[in-house]
Length: 231
Ligand SMILES: C[S@@+](CC[C@H](N)C(=O)[O-])C[C@H]1O[C@@H](n2cnc3c(N)ncnc32)[C@H](O)[C@@H]1O
Image 1 (tube, rainbow, N blue to C red):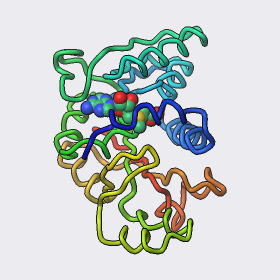
Image 2 (tube, rainbow, N blue to C red):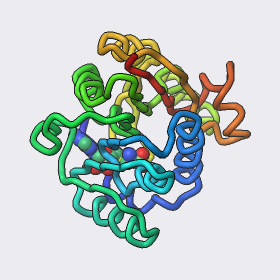
Image 3 (tube, helix red, strand yellow):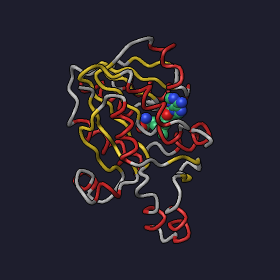
Image 4 (cartoon, rainbow, N blue to C red):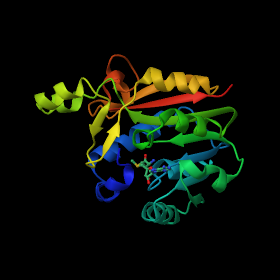
C-alpha cells in the first residue's frame, strides 16, 4: 500500500465535494449520540479537522495529531476562523509516545486512517492505549463487506467481480488501500479491552442518516463507523 501521502493533493482538492461533505456530516451526527462537552478528545490523523473542530465547538477539549503540514495549516486556519481553541500537534500514529507522552483521553478518534496502515491490529492497539477507563474510541474504515457495491452501482461489472475476492481497492484519490471486516475490527478492539457500543454505515448516499443506523442498509455503506468503550 502506498500510504495516504500519494493521494494528499487529491484529498485537499476534493475537500468540499458532495461525497466528503456527506461523509463528514454522517460521522458528526453519529458521534453526537455519544459525546458531551466535558470530554477530552484525541483525533489521530485529524487532517483538515472537520470532526476535531466540531468536537471543539461542542465544548470538548480537542487535541489533533496530523503529519501533513498542509493539512495542519488548513485545520489551524479553520479553527481560527471559527474562534475555536484546539491543540494541534505534528505527529503520527507511529510516534504518539514522543508527541503526547502518556496522556489518555475520553474519546480517541481515527477517521479515514486505518485503510492506509499496513498493520491494522497494531494501530488499533496503539489507539486503544490512549482511551481512559470509561472512554470511547471512534474509528472509521473501508467496509470490506461492500467493496463490490460501488463498481456495481456504476455498472462496472468487471470491477465488481474483481472486488468480490480481495480486500484491496483503489480509492477515489487513486491510492491503493485496504478494506476491513467489521468482525475483525470489533474483535481487535475487544482484545484491547474495548467493547462495541454501536456501529454505523457511512456513505450510503440515499437517506444517509436513517439508513446508516439500521440493518440491512448499514452493511452497504462504503465505510463503517465503530464506537467502542473501555469499561
Ligand atoms: C483520509 S484523511 C482523513 C482526515 C480526517 N481524519 C477526516 O476524516 O477527514 C487521512 C489522514 O490521516 C493522516 N495520516 C496518514 N498517515 C498517518 C499516520 N501514519 N499517522 C497519523 N495520521 C496519518 C493523513 O495525513 C490525513 O490527514
